Image (cartoon, rainbow, N blue to C red; front, side, top):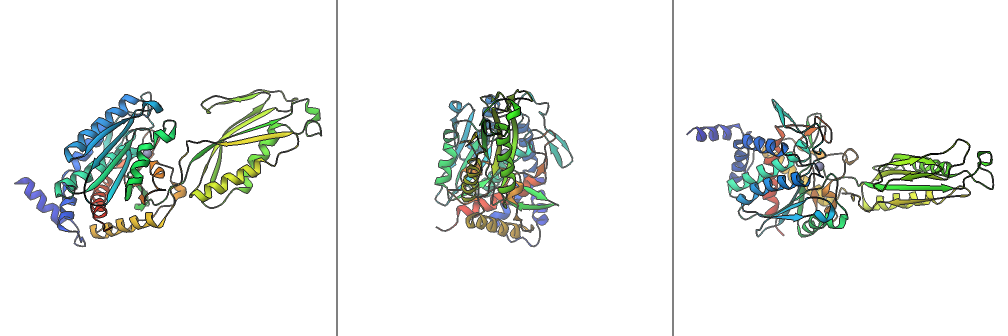
Length: 430
Ligand SMILES: [Zn+2]
């Protein structure tokens, strides 16, 4: 009786502007009535450490998601990824006659077991915890949306695939194996929806139709070494440090264009200079009166499209090739980078469908978020093959830092949007 009364009250709570089909209204009501369950699930997910290198913890979060998805009728597989140095991924499928919608999120977080930040804490509608938004809030939104579809009967015939990677924050190597299953699922899908953090600014929700690439590069310069009295003379040339300085400063002056950034993260030069095998630590020694023999720098570039990426790389190589006399240099791009997710008409069409959902829910429309303000994510690996909309997870802030938080109100808001959007997309005419 009490539940019935609550349901009647909830029905009145939905704005008069709502133009939902009866089953869509049932999904929205199911999300509301399970709001407490969703927060409790999020709390349990956050309280299991799943730092990317904590393979056991990542697998445990995978098992927790299996326990949520199997009762909804999903066939759940664990894809072991130990050959890449990582735990593995969850791939879950729910077959149906309609369009295939791929849902993407991740099990891992940046907080390893040695981090002091380990537990869920709640103060009113604000909750903090490691990975609470990135990406355990996304996992909670997916479960809440699918449970609502299940309750309303719209999941029964829905064709949905879910890929939850276990190494989004530090992908395993080689990337061709680490992202094989995600890329395959993207190729087979008609639409992809990624549940990383919702972009919010000044209280307004935004849609993510684009993400920039992230590619690391390593630059090594070398020169002739000798007594500093001969520096920049015909015989010695200027040495490796001047060559490095020329290249980096030319990058800074010549590369800039909209949506492209170039960063130098670490540098060392001297006689000698070296870099560790992980590429994280450079060391150098030298004397003030010796012309430097070697210089090493590492950094990244971020671009918005494959064309911009190719153009930027070519321009960088062109700058490198203009060597100072008696010097040389070589620029190598890492192979494990994230490709760009360009703002395609197809991605924008999914956002338009989401905005129809927003109107029908009585929510404001969502504008496109500036891709320069977002990082790369797993959706980038499928966006070249399938229309993709990103940022469908929880909204908050402080991702990758202690004190990471979300606004718990974003969970039901995002789950309603997702349940209705997934349902409508799976029923799109071919
Ligand atoms: Zn993430």
